[in-house]
Length: 286
Image (cartoon, rainbow, N blue to C red; front, side):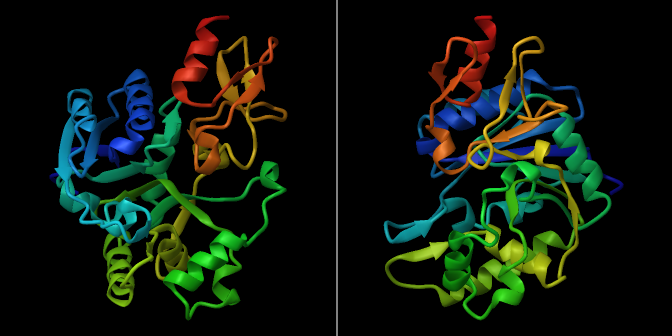
């Protein structure tokens, strides 16, 4: 796009996820190489999250409108991911990162940007040899489909899940309009107590039905810690893939219970989490 100003990496959260989002922003600032700017969305204008305005280039505070009857995710309820070009106009590429991710380098971001030039969205299909114990499709996937898109059958939900915790897309991608349209349709159908919203299943549906194209990101660009425990390389001070050739993981994703799970890692076997602050503290002690 002629008037674009490059790549914007965006994350967002409410005060409940402030600590993890702080880790992500700190990790991104530690690997800044001039190839991207950083944006943050303070969901519901949380008091703690206001402090993050000083650590990013662009900042927005937005009310979610979510009530106590919501089950699922505020980000999905707001269609936050599908509105990035409207919320932060003027960039050629957008990379979203969930607040429970963090980076060891900028390579995963660069891959997302390059992949976005080859398809409507660059995203990780949740497949890797290390994820061998994960059922495809999982019961959670099927339950979400029944809640959000009840007319979709096994010919759709049998495809491996894609993970929207990290994705990249061009500003002129079909992703934004298609994703927004399907989320609006789901919102019109949903109502009453216990409403469930998620944006990952609708995007999976768009991919599985061929409405949008994807360029696959590798597992190291969005490593699901809950599906395969990484290893630590004491000499390089990096978190790595747990089998040879022990590649450096670009982006770690602490989805689900991995946010709080402790692991007995390293020669001392001391329990630590895979949060950025814990791993940084561990490597600095070596």
